Structures are given as C-alpha cells and as structure tokens.
Image (cartoon, rainbow, N blue to C red):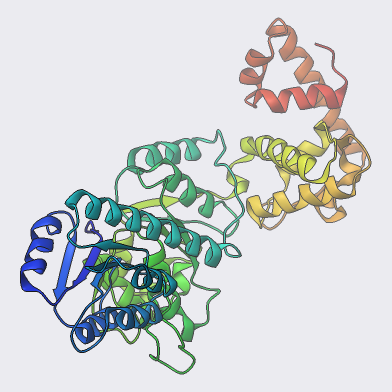
Length: 456
C-alpha cells in the first residue's frame, strides 16, 4: 500500500498568492490550486480533499457561497477562509456557514501552518468518530488470543513476526475458531494500532450494497444516494481493514478488491477520481478457497494477493489442552458481566468438555459457559449443569461413543484413579512431574485429583 499525505485545495484569484501557497505547502501535502470558485466546487465534488483554503473575495462567485457548496458536498471537509477585511461580519459569516477558521491577510506563515495542522487534526478525529459510529454494531466481541497448543504457539510466532509489516494476511479455519481475534491481535500489535480497525462481513452485506459499503459512493450516483458516503476502505485510512467471510464475496466485487489490493487505490461509485488508500488488509474465511477457485467461485489472482501470510486456525477438538484455559477465561468474563461467583469446574465435568468434539468450536464453548453461569445457583460447574446431549454424546462422528453410568465406566475411573495415585507416589508428590509422566497437562491433573478426592 502506498503512503498517503493529506490533500489540500487552495482557492485564490491571485496567481502570486497561489505561488506562495505552493512554496509553503507542496513539500508536506498533496496540493491542488485554482483561481476560480466554480472550479473549486467542481474539484471538491470530483476529487478527494482533506482541507480547503479559500479566499473570501472572489470574482464570479463569493467565497462564502463556495464555502456553502463545499460543505454541502462533504460536510467533513474543513475550510479555512482567508480575507483581507478586518471587519467582524465577514468573519462571523464564515464561521456561521461552517468554516473551521479564518485568517486575515497579510498573515504570518506560522499562523497559517498552525491553523492547517489544527484543521487536519480535527478532520482526523471526525473521521475516527464517524468510523466508530458506523462500525459500532458490527464490531466483533473483544477477546484475547489464548492457548498452549503447539499450533497456537506457532501462530503466536507468526503474529509477532508480521504484526509490524503491511503484508496482507489470510486467516483460514472453521467457524468459531477465533479468526477475528487473530486479526484484531495483529492490528493491536502493529504500528497501526492507534488507527482505525474496520470490520467488513462480506457475507452479511447484500450484494447490491457491498461495493458502496466498501468503497463509498458520490451523491446522486444511484437512486437514494442523497449524500456522499465514505466506504469502509476510506474509514480505515491509516489503519487495518478486516474482510471477514471473504470467500462469500461475489466474483464481480472480487475484481474491484483485487485492484485495491494491487494498486492501493479505490473509486467511489459515481466518482471519476481514484482515491489512494493507506491500509493493511486482513482477510478470513471458513471456506476452502482452492476448491472455490476450481469451482470458478473465487479468483485465483486475488487468492494469491491475499495469501501472502497464511494463518490456519485449528479447531477446538485439536486443542484439548486449551479447553481449561478457555473455560476459566469465560467463567471470569461472565462472572463479572452477570455478577455471579462460579469458582471452578469439577474434574468429571472437565473430562466431558475435553471429550466433546465442539463442532461450533470456541464460540460454542463460550455460549455454553455463558448459559451455565447465567442459570447456575451454585459456585461450581458439574455434570449436572451440562446439557444432556453433551453428557450422553461426548464425541460426534469424529469418534462417537456414549457416556453412560455402568460397570465399564466405573472400572475405567477406578483404574485411572489407581494410575494417578501410583504416578504421584513415583514422582514424590510433584504434580508437574506427575502430569508429564502421565502425558497430561497439570491443570487436567489437578482437576482429576479433585474429582477423585485424591489428597496430595
């Protein structure tokens, strides 16, 4: 992605004044100039500007009229008015019709530069607030990337290595595995962490609205387009955009996304000018994109543009050792939210959690913990709190078997208890060494000691 500078339009009917502006501003900003108020209005409607510096006294059309028109086109653009008059009324009129500030000629260069910096900083804040307003209902719930599983440790390393780069990341994995948390973690660890983090769910937005939502549109570009609308790519300026469910994006839209990724530019619907973007793109999908390419449902060139840094999230059934971590995390979360006091989960209940296949992955686990904490009147989670379908069927087709109270299960538990006692004795009561000897995690061992009433 190319780096972007703030764009400023200067409007003054005196050529020597325009030359002064050029010498002062062209090294730091993208600068456009014009001597015509009507031309300024046209430029503002066709091009992207962060700031306009506008002379009040203009031929053909008064500067204040130009100000009104520009604010109608895009109310977020700040305008600094410049006047040779020291009278109060013109200044009041400028502020009344939306000018950021006014400067009286002849002005001090430092006063001009200071006012420009303040105006651009204000626009930055406005854009960030606009993003927050539009994204409020779309934000994924906050969460932390946790886990001790070896595959997750590798993902930790990848995140640490790529966070500060601008490389595009493609996160794959089943639904509910935490792809959105990985994306947000990358953003938080990046040099863009203090910039917007914008989420686009490509599957949730109707196809006929997706382009407008992503790239924006100009006023009058289609029926119902009453105002200029900034798309998610502009709202993410300087930050990160997360394209969730990228595999659901229509083919026609994939072509336009490919251009944005390759060239670092977008165009609003109805717009004639290319707008440079400076963002980091992270995409995610639960689909097999290689198969989608074979089925002509996903562009191969876009796939390779997105798949610069691939991250595959393992399903929860392959992260059994992480289940106790998630359970504790979610218990803490919902204890606070619901003012409850669940203190622990019994070993028997934990065994069932670790034997279940979790087709809905981490999301299913979190929803279940929330339900249990909400409904429970106890200070712990036991098998009685678990849904019957999970208790009676710990695994689905990945390894189906029933958990029923019978002689076999009792014999298995008695044997397991005996093995644990012998291992503890062999390791002189050292729980860490015992867990290692048994090939289980220490947290699992502690849960089993509690479930079997083994005193250590």
